[in-house]
Length: 294
Ligand SMILES: [Cu+2]
Image (cartoon, rainbow, N blue to C red; front, side, top):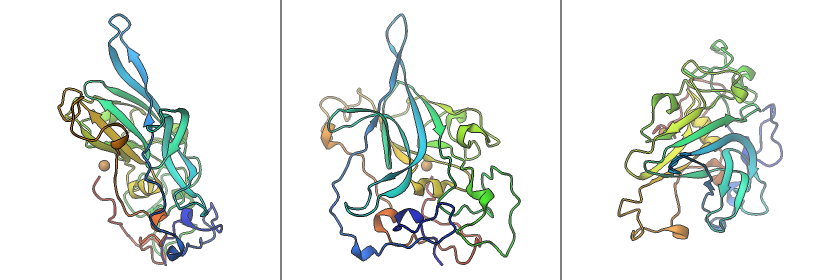
């Protein structure tokens, strides 16, 4: 049997996972019909020195939650996803939206030498829609015992593994202080009710002292990263340096509307083919390889 991701199925999904979803027939989905979209950009609170007026930091509040998003072409059902959200600016129109969430999630536009502080909030209050494997070295917020064979099939899997959902964000490629680096064991559940052994804080500091580059941020939870990223917890983090000729006023690189963060991945919600993670009948020690480059 395949792990059939419930969020791309038509109607038969049971949130507790007690019924197997019916996958869409991928041959019925028209290709290349959706407009290419640019993720919105997070809007900071600009913190200034009271005397000099110099910018001290850009501060954000970012929440991870569950919602639906129209990923398949119009006329097909919206997809249940996870994503980060907060106050954003729509790049094409400059419209400000106080609470916008999406996957890929909104982009951080950072300037070199201006640090960023992000208050990360876990608002994932429902059970994980994908099969959490409690036979791995994983976050294990309920401190459940590792099950032995014969394993339960998914759905429904192990209720103590499916909920609550731990998360911890990591800025991939960022030169970040340890307490803000999103160690896999520094996870926290909704409301920070349960926290991992290396959890220190959920307000992270990003110094932005490194060379300008395109980074991405994503979930980093021990033994669950692949599931949480697959659900949508990922976005871009663009670090610019106005002093760098490639980022400055006379840059030859695309700017404004023409500058689009872009990534590609195998996305089950786009292909709608059954997600090729073999779970067989149970939880037999599978470690999918799709997202190993963290
Ligand atoms: Cu990474």
